[in-house]
Amino acid sequence: MLQDDIDIKDTSTTEDDDSHSQSQSQSHSDDDSNSDDISLSDNDDEQLISADGRREMTLVTFEEWDCRILYLIVEFCYTDNLSIMNVKPSDEIARIMANLRSASKAFKIRSLYNKVDQWGFRNISRYPALACAVIDEGIRLDDIDPLAMKTLQLKPGAGLLPTEDGAGSGVLALSRPGLVFVLRQMEDKTSHLLLFHSLQRWVEFSSDRYSYANPAQEKASKMAFASKCAMRFIKLERIGPGKLEEVMSSGLIVLEKSLVPPSTPSVTERAIIVRPSTLVMTQ
Image: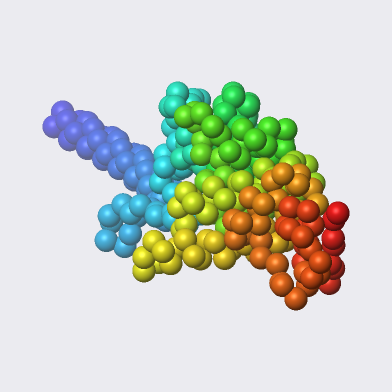
């Protein structure tokens, strides 16, 4: 009887040992499985976790776009809308929209591109003087908005020389490269007297982006630059005789006296345009 009890106990112990062995085996198997999972997770995050176990962030610098443009792109991606659309249009807003237009193509966000175009149709058509700011910013970005250019060609007076206190400053929004570009595009499409008055206003009231010691030096620099533009793009034969006196007395167009015939009665009767290799006289 005692022997039977011993056998039963031994059997029970053996079964317990087997059960414990199986449990340990299962536990090791689970640990191996978990280890594989952890290893896989570690591989996925190996670029985000440093050697000491701390999670690191990747810094991406966009040198071409300022923080306002990036903020608006993020806003649009989350809300499918732009809060700037509800802001009263101005030259500064027009420049931001020009940047957004270029950024939407760089980041391939077609819906944002359409949103910017919607702003353009609604505001540039209504306020043509905004076109100059959009074009000027487009030159810097090498991405000129065709709607702004077309509006300026169709409404040159309102686009270059706005008379009302509306949105946009017209020709005053143009930098030197922007001024040359607009004059080149407009010389065959609008009145040359209008182009002359645009140059005059640019000299008197524009804010040059260069640094000068005093205002007189700034105005002299702008005057010299505008004079070169006038000699290149403004044709006196396309200005009425009644306005020639005003044009010639402005100082923007300077004629060489040696090229003026001695019998010339007055500037209003005969005008001479000096070109690199051409002398054109109109009666």
